Image (cartoon, rainbow, N blue to C red; front, side, top):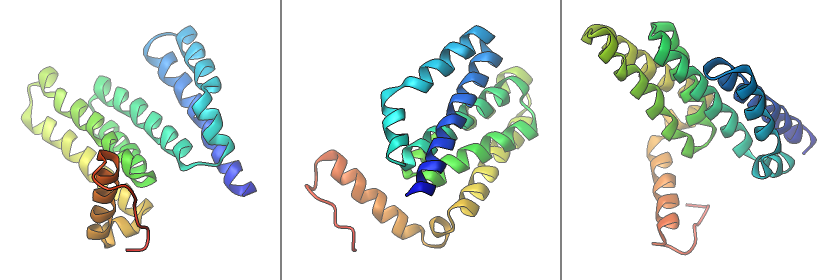
Length: 173
């Protein structure tokens, strides 16, 4: 339990640092400091860190995805596409709700077309994001690639429970 809390607390501090970096880089140093201060005292984050929840890791990887996606949007380089995809892959492997993180870097890569007017460069960026995301998600969560039907089954169960179709979720199927 102590190790889990240390990992969770480290991820929480990392999230504060990444939030500061996003605000400082894309708005102003004062905005970065204010955003970091708000991130440090957000009640749900503090609570989840105390309980050593996986949600703190998801918060960190989502923040990293946002930072990398902003860099991709402004730089539009293959390296920034790979980094944004890798960050999204980490988010996807942290928790199934992290799957939505892939949308941001894919959109930023596709939006580069409107600046460059190059379909080839846009395809390279979108492909880089997708390949990096799948590779990192596969490395970080091997069962997700080895048994995708089981992952799909579990996600369908969560979706059914969230929509009210079922009133309980059996863990041993």
